[in-house]
Length: 226
Image (cartoon, rainbow, N blue to C red; front, side, top):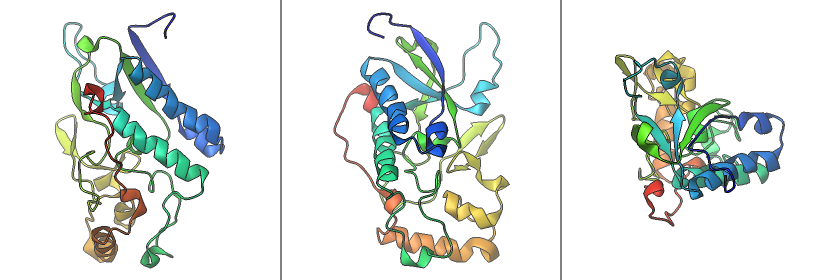
């Protein structure tokens, strides 16, 4: 990029490939690449499936897209380190044993990361001059400034004419069988099925015993970190 700076870079971002092949060095390099792009002065946004299928007129505008920030990527970097150390999702609350599998991707990743926003891969758009981009919020199913005791996703995302809540891995909550909702940080829609798990998770979260709820200190204050 230093020798041949491009105005726009559109890429498929696929950390799921090295994850599934246990290539941890390559997995970390995917995060470092995005950090380098941001440090080079680019603005990076996540092109969600609903945006990829958007078909504006030639003189129209693109929909708002969530921004990938260095603060988000700090969580991606931390999670890769935890995977490398075989500590992702650890320690697990004792009462979860037998109910939930540990060290699961995406369920045990940070909900403040970019990686939590997709199952295997996503598309990203980096722009040196962001005039063509319409910025929305920041990536992440939880906000970077949400408190560490928040577990369930409450943020809604617009798709067509409807608002939806998505769980870990960008799995739509209300299309999900209730037995999987709590594990994906989705609100429980059938208390007979997942009400006990919901109460268990809320208690563990309030007590600070959910490892993936960790919050990293913000070390930077540049525009791309906000």
